[in-house]
Length: 176
Image 1 (cartoon, rainbow, N blue to C red):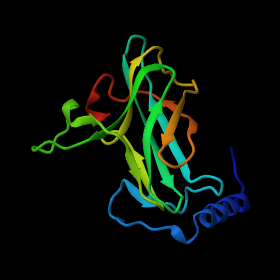
Image 2 (cartoon, one colour):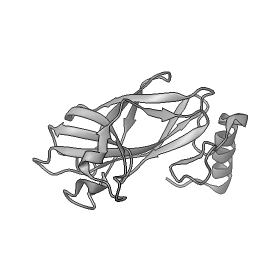
Image 3 (spheres, rainbow, N blue to C red):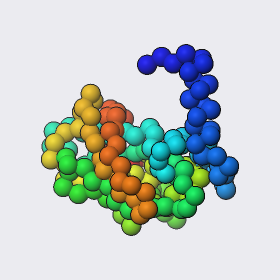
Image 4 (cartoon, helix red, strand yellow):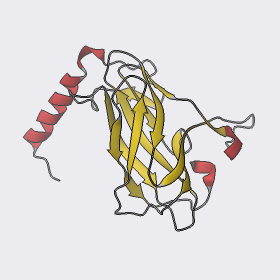
């Protein structure tokens, strides 16, 4: 989709206005958090962008989903769960570094939620936090439109269509 220069300026102005004066970044040096200014829409407390799932092959039991979430609300919120019809279970995983600075499957543990501070953006990305799809009942392939349901502690439940991207590292789970 092409957007004219005037259209782009209108979109930027609308996004900037939607989050108002509540735009802060408490940790500007952290690449996983950024200002909410360019992500919020007026009608939602939580804005989601860059939502994608790693493609999977037939018989591959797991995959991972990633996204960027911006809390446009005035209160902190928490992503408490996710669901996907194409898997037996879905878990929110956070990656922790081991003593030697490495990550492993053991360090990618399920968590009971991902906190979204008011006015901030959190990114779940390869090598960090992710949504783990376990017991896949079908392959996730490019050009499909998988939908994950995201449930928040305060905000309304969101059904998000995810883009499918080719697996870069095959079965190497170290970069979930």
